Length: 133
Figure (cartoon, rainbow, N blue to C red):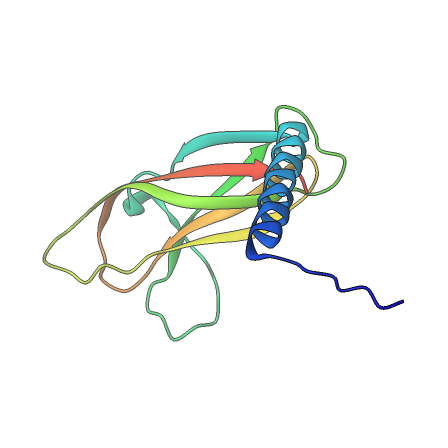
C-alpha cells in the first residue's frame, strides 16, 4: 500500500510557531535561573591615574586600575560586560581611551580605564554587569 503524506504550509507554520514558543520559554527559564550582579565605578580624572608601565608605542599611557569583589561568589568565573556610561574630556585634544578587562574569577574581576598621549579625561564612569554561564 502506498500512502501519500500531505504536509501543508499551515502544518509547517503551526509546528514552527510551537517550536519558537518552546524556545522562548526555555530561554526565559534559563535566564530566570541566572545570577546577575552589576555596579558602577568612577575611574575619575586621568590626572590621578598611574603609568601602565607597558612597553608600547603609546606615549604616556596611564590607567585607573580597579578591583571588584562580587557580593556573592559565583560557582565559576562569570561573563563580565563593561560599558562607559559617562565621559568628560578636553575638546581640544584627540580622545583616546580603552576599558580593559584584565582578569575574571568567581569572586571578582579586575579592569582598567586607560588613556595615552595628550588626551585629557576629566571624568570617566563605567558600568559593569556579570552573568553566570
